[in-house]
Image 1 (cartoon, helix red, strand yellow):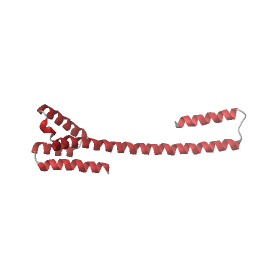
Image 2: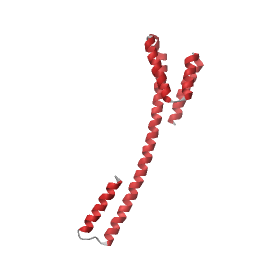
Image 3: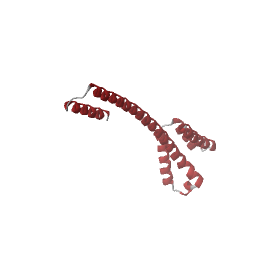
Image 4: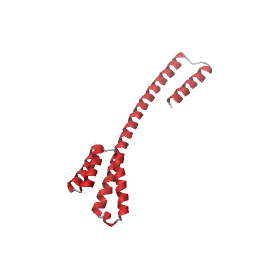
Length: 143
C-alpha cells in the first residue's frame, strides 16, 4: 500500500515535470508534503501493528476462557441437573472422552492434575479444588 502511494506520487511528479516544468518552490512543497504523508503512513502502520497485536492477545485470552467454560459446563451442568444419571454407559464414555480431550487441549498441567485428582479420588474436596482452579484461572486470564 505504501509503495503504491509513493509510486503514484512519483508518477504524478514525473508527469507534471514532463508537461512544462515545475518551479523549484512547487517541487519543494510537493516533496515536503510527500515526506509528511510518508511519516503519517509509517505512524499509522505502527499503530495498526500494535492494535493488531493487542487484538490477537485478547482473542487468545477469550479462546482460553471459552475452553475453560466448555470444560466447566461439561461437568457442572450435567452434575447439577442430573442429566448424567439418565444416560447410557456409552453416552457417558463419549462425554468423558470429549471432556478429557478438551482438558488436554488446554495444555495446562495443573488443570490436568486437578481433573485426575477429582476423577480418581471421587473426593468432594478434589472436585471443589478442580472447579475453584477453573474459575480462578478464568479470572486471571481475563485480568
